[in-house]
Structures are given as C-alpha cells and as structure tokens.
Image (tube, rainbow, N blue to C red; front, side):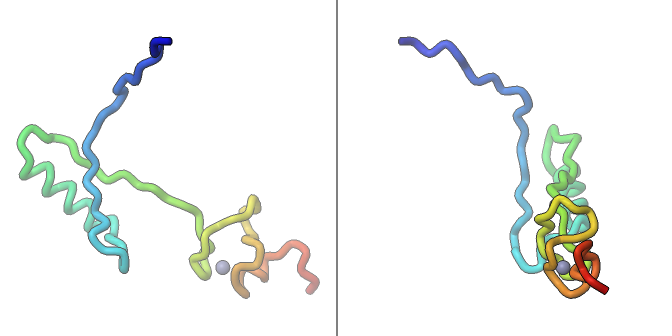
Length: 89
Ligand SMILES: [Zn+2]
C-alpha cells in the first residue's frame, strides 16, 4: 500500500543551542547577547531572538513544581510545608 500522508514543513528554522555549559546555565542576558551577535554577523539573518522554555519551581528551594496547587508543592522543603493546607497549626 502506498503512503498517503506526507510531512509539510510549517515553520522550519535554525536554533542556536547555547547550552555550552550546564553550571551555571547561560543567563537570559547572555542569550540576548548571542542573538544580537547572530543578527550582526550572519548574512541574511535579520531576526534572531531568545526563546524561553520555562518550568515552574518552588520559590524557596528551586525544586520542580509537581503539584496542581499554586501554593503548595507537596512539601519539597520546610518553607513549602508551611503552605500545606492540611497542616495543623
Ligand atoms: Zn521547596
């Protein structure tokens, strides 16, 4: 049977991976600088911009946010545990 579907390129683009180091990860300011350098130095490239991939994290300890609640992350740290709705005073 012949293949009836095909892949259509909707939005093909170049990504510049700036994870040249893991610790500390590049800052947004460093990424903006790299994007600016690309715009200035690469022929026929007028647009290069920073794209964020974010994830929610505990504001106190930085643990990945795993809960549906907006105020309690399952007790990832003592400060978070203070927001436990089931906590007895
Ligand atoms: Zn925490």
